[in-house]
Image (cartoon, rainbow, N blue to C red; front, side):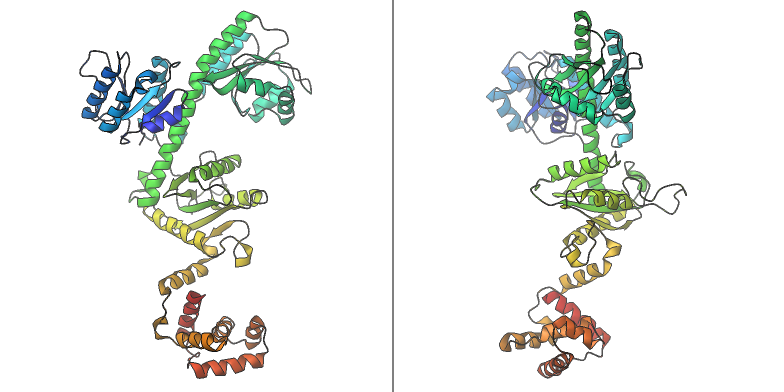
Length: 530
């Protein structure tokens, strides 16, 4: 499901901003409202673009028609959306109202929205494999290389290579390393930072000349790619001599076209994440009887993992960004992460019995891989922890695996060595199943002041009245049953003192410790008291 708010957040406030969110209707098409056409108020699920509206009265009339038709929302110019009459009408009708920024053309907005909505509505649209084709970027890189008469790379704001031209003449080692590694080498980045290149790119739309650098790095002419005041990326041209002004103008024109492509790719990727997260929420909450109902998941079986982050990150969206950054850095390029009821979850693929012999056990997105990742990351961020639920062999078992992951995350001291649990931050159900069983029994027993008539009630009252330690003595005896020496050491008393206490507590409340069932029941009740 894609709402008007989803679309606006994906494109960015520099292009489209939501004024009234409305009822959150799913958007599945984009239509134009032609002036004077009474039938252009849209149909259910359509986003209506109010092109050429004469004034606020026309905008209100379009909103009323869209609301009556069940349209998903209306987009108008900022001057109309800022009119109180228009905004009040949208709130009264509970219809989404968004504004297009003054510098954005309707043609560009239609192209962007159409691409995002069409991708989302395509079969298997929630699966990220078909999203974000970069073929157009490589074609633009070749066009820019032809305009500059020099090799070109297109990079994002993090100096990651998005595309590069086929032309390889007049190149240098830095360009080759950048193309092979898909990222500018650290020493070259440091050189450009010291020269103030990135600072100028972030603040201005003017071309920047990056000076020659270490190891034979040639100068670069850098054309910033911007849209709505936002820096989206850059065109880097390898130059040996000054570039003529007419070629720089052509590169600037190409940067404007490139900005639209980068916006569209970003919006498509963002919508893909939203669709994936929505499908995962449904699977984790409700499950599904047919495994074919969730093409976004890899082949099962699966495990649900509850992900947590200590520190000042109470917002689950911030936690999601933290975990996405971590797992992508270690090779999980299409992470199955989502938030549900204010908590963060992931779905891991467990190697199945029908896997090929050459398939690794620690492939990205598997439980073994997650242990490896946290083992690498936790020395620098000890707050990251994961609780891995039991095996889910079908979609209908995913909610059960999620509930188990929640149980593990609530275990006392989960993930801390002092509690006898793994120190690598990953707690799996099979590792602590006994603690889960005891915790379930303890929770079922609850805080019963009468203790179901067991002798523990009398022993507890005796301890409170006389300052004795009969409950602690009985606990140590049960934990080390048949070994009075270890039980005495746990209490830091002499074994003879232990035997004396056992005789006295038997006088205060007769207990048949020869019965295995009695011993089990007593220990569970003691766990509840603890």
